[in-house]
Amino acid sequence: MFRDQVPNSMSMLLFGGISFLAAAFRGLTGFGYALIAALGLFIFPSPADGVAFILFIDLVLTVLLLLDRDHGRVDWPVTRLLLVMGAAGALCGSLLAVHLDDQTSKQVVALAIFLAACVAMIRRPPAWLRHTAFGAGIAFLVGGLLAAFAVGGPLIAAWLLARSSDRRLVKGTLAVFFGAVDALSLLARGIVGALGPDLPDHIAVYALPTFAGFALGRALSSRMGFETWRRISTGGLLAIAAAGLIQTVLALSRDLLP
Image 1 (cartoon, helix red, strand yellow):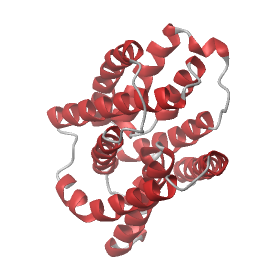
Image 2: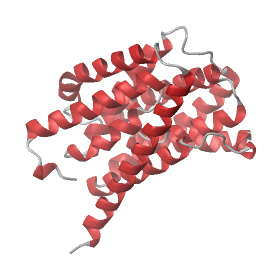
Image 3: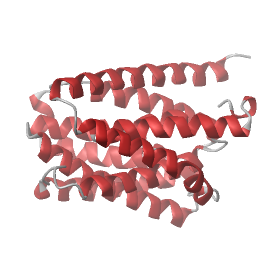
Image 4: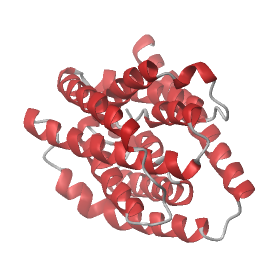
């Protein structure tokens, strides 16, 4: 959105800082990397480049979390349903990403960040949300949003929380779902030519601060009580929602103003 106003070195520092904070939040809470990192997509000349990087890093962080024995168990009957619908949505989302122009993509990303963060702040999802039909539809929608814009994860989290109060089970199921959808999204984007030619360069530049942030978040998480964790999670999501709303207004006003 503001790429032409920001020098290249400054944009690298800005996104490196955003990715560091996003990874630290993911390491601390177990979620939120893509949601926060997507706030930095305005720095990239094309959202496709930034989304591909976010999907790749989110996949790597998911694998690291799954290797942690304390991360949680997996509800495989539910996960199979989510994976099938999420895969179908990811294929559709990858095709959509190819046909959207850059400005429209940035507007949709900003709005999706705001809505997803608002959903994530719902502490007690309604009981009617737990029905399987809702889960199938939400998994398809989230798969499409993740593939096209790297956001939308809190929607499926809300559905899982409505079905189960076991945090470890929810976290483990989410990790498998996000990892599979991220991998499929990257594969589909590669097939349709939407990965972006600069992905290896972005990984080389931003991987170090990203993984440093993740390590910091994990270290802090091991020393943090539940109430502190809850306050940080809620406060972080509130800040994300506010930032997403600001970006949405700026993105829309740019087209409306002469």
